[in-house]
Structures are given as structure tokens and as C-alpha cells.
Amino acid sequence: MANQHAKGIERLQNATKFSIAGFKATWQHEEAFRQEVLLFIVACPAAFFLAKNSVEIIILIGCIILILLTELLNSAIEAVVDRIGLEQHELSGRAKDIGSAAVMLSLIWAVITWAIILFF
Image (cartoon, rainbow, N blue to C red; front, side):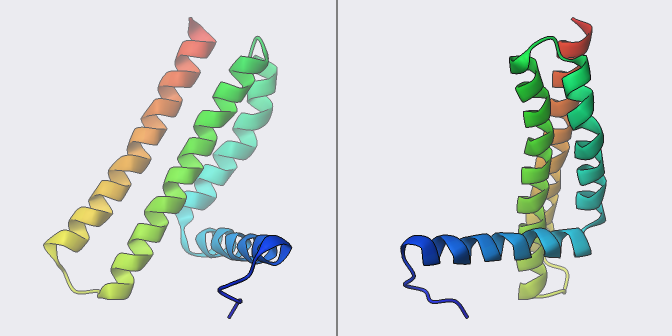
């Protein structure tokens, strides 16, 4: 276990290690995250090719990153809920549904953003 009172470079190294572990765990256990990473891999070069300027590139890539961020948070919520217990509970279901809704909203936002920038 890492030193809870780490400071400076040691704290930064610990945070980096934990973040990489989070990416690995999400990649390993969440198919949706793997699909969204594939979307990111395709969308990044497309943004450079299709955008008219650097601001549009940042916006197009940024909304895909928003999907990844939302999926990471949703996966964290699901892991905590599952850790608490696997039995059916209204609040557990609600938490998972709300996380899923957040991911869906980020996907809708990305589609709208890409459509507006590319077609208007």
C-alpha cells in the first residue's frame, strides 16, 4: 500500500500508478470502455482531417474524451455498488441507471457536436 502521507514527487508517482491501474482495470472489465477507446482512436485522426481549425479539433476530440471520462466514472460507480452487494436493491439499480444515463448523455452530446461542426 502506498504511503498515505506522500508529498511532492512521491505523491505524483503514486497518483500516476493508481491512475494507470484504473485504466487497466476499466479496459479489462468494461467492454463499453474498450469500444469507446476504439471510437477515440478513429475520431482523433478524423477530427484533424475534418475540422476547419484548431478550435474545432479540440472540441471534436474533447467531446470524445468526455465520453471516456463519463464511462470511467460510471464504471467506478458500478464497481462500488457491486462491492457493497450483488443482491437487487432499488438504490443500487438507481445508481447504476443514473451512471448509464450520464454515459448516454455524453454520447448524445458528442453526436450533436460532431454534426454541428461537420454539417453547419
